[in-house]
Length: 407
Figure 1 (cartoon, rainbow, N blue to C red):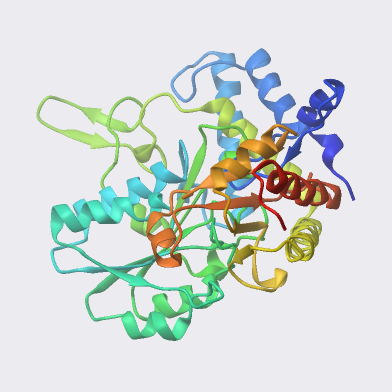
Figure 2: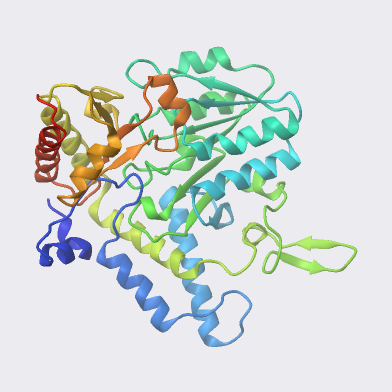
């Protein structure tokens, strides 16, 4: 089924006579009309600060904000709404965990396990702890198909391993990591487990209890929601013992110049005025995903990826990284084309309003490991069709001619 009509941006460009082929959903998905309408309705009818106002408008805004939290809780199957912290994005969520654990639990000589395929956002906060506290980072490398082996992980675990942080779906390789099996292994070893679900939560069912994770993070703008809204899920008993990341209004119980008593969860981690309309939009995005259904979304991802492999496989000089089977990957595929820099390819494709990503994708350690400076990345969501992939393949051939590269 084609869901493109749910997204006003495609109609806008169609009317301009320049149809949009959008293949950069791993960076940001387009917003469906249902989300745009929900945000507009809130801003027009319930725009007020939350929690502290005793007038009706503020209470309405507060109710919408907390209902959004409950929507996220149910979406993730978290045990309590106290386990859902609203942040700006995945990056802030990971930084919050790194800062708080660095203050409360992690000590010099402790070890953190991550993969070389992680986004910089899931590397730099831990690197900060390595530099400031003497934490040791252990790197897991993927195999030739971009898969991470549980056996390799087990070999790298030491008595000093305190935390593991892995993506559910790689934002470059597209690999779907076995996070449930990882989580069970880490829970048995009493190792905390953080899952970066930025690339998976809008594509695959996510049950934090089945994954056995202690923390899970994601961004609204990669699942049909607005920008500036993210989520940190954390087990309540862990969050309760962690110090706040930011301090200010809304996260306190009592303040004096001698002592401050922080508010209970989740307010302790939500200092200042929150992004209320963003939370409302995120809840609407979740409802939209539920309406489409994960079976349908998964079918689209696999169909688009299979079509991409088929068409790009006929182009000489194309190298696609990651798993070879569409069933083993999310809706993300990165590739190189011999003799053409990814930036040049993206620039030429843009002339035909074909939007792809080019660069190191905030994954420079992985690029070095793969032996490339950059790749071209395509990524899909519910609005993509086989015709989008067809136009991409034709655009690559056109680019080859423009750059005087013969097939």
